[in-house]
Length: 460
Image 1 (tube, one colour):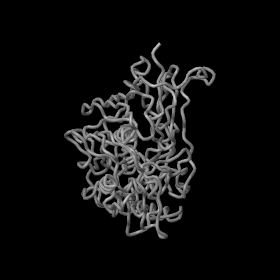
Image 2 (cartoon, helix red, strand yellow; image 1 turned 90 degrees about the vertical axis):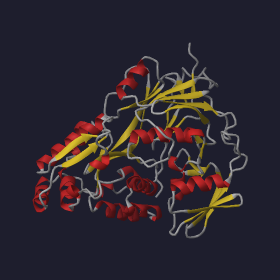
Image 3 (cartoon, one colour; image 1 turned 120 degrees about the vertical axis):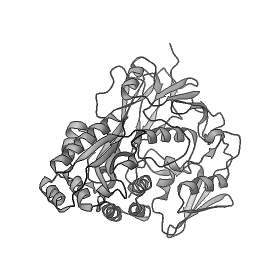
Image 4 (cartoon, helix red, strand yellow; image 1 turned 60 degrees about the vertical axis):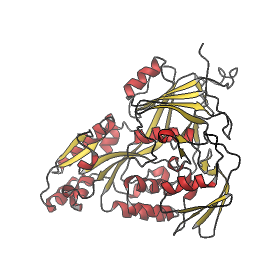
């Protein structure tokens, strides 16, 4: 199943006629502000969408992948100049592009691919084969091209302090843990030098601070809360499809949450329509499925209606349970609102659920259930499900790697949801505001931010 997606390209010059006399030029620094922050350069699974967004933005700018996605969301060559597979899809052969230089001056080689891909996909058997890299699996890899196009499969080396060294249009030139990151143009980039001289990323900035800095001319690209009014002024707003999954995830081996009846009761107590209408302000879609409807085509088959009568019946059948602790990201205002509403829904069903923001004294593993927000990262259903499996360590969902077609994926997803260890709530879009001086910024509908062709007008 390969849905067609169009790139959401921002023609950020105000009006077409106004930009007719303006042409792309080299120079300038793009100032970016985000909520997420990075303290290390590990490519790790993360159920925090704000951190994942920042990590993916940097990886896309700094490191290339074997496969890229074109304007329709279809695989195209990148570091792999071409590929082929055997008849059953268990073995794939990628011809490595020659003449590619890394930021440290080294020449790109097949062994670098082996190291990077193996680290992120331990179940695959990856080995160099002359100018090719061979990837083998015990089962057919139906979605491998889409998976290899995801940010976590970027091909990077570890430099000083673990900083990523890649072949992308920008190199990492400065880093202050949790605060700032400086990217500089890579003149020898195999796809051509970017127009921008650099990108300065400010981390850990709230939505409010970001909006203020954009209005005061201190930022060029910021995040928006997709559920709130957009910043005023002569800015361009870009929104993706519903790419963030909001869900409840029960913590394994927590005694208070081991009874499936308790988990199902909490799931059926949720008033998703109210969360969608009031808290999300009708942005995205309420959903009892892991994938949004536009991606899978079958999300409507999962029943997400509130059923308090059945909820109370299930609760009465369950052993007496102590209050459940619900953790959420304290830096995410929307997560706090959703956590509070989930707690009210649970109370109506006779379940005591205590929301608590994560802090140094209270981590998610201390909670019985977590409220998570996960970036799907792929416009292909099977690859998106496989990514959720990795982030949440759900073994049942890993079957999505080898599932082909909507019916097979529906079976995989249904099997993963039937024990209520994960309870989807909604899918919401990501949104950005961009200053008028920024041109040719590309943000795909599936949430990838591409800075290679961006440029900024010189200050007047």
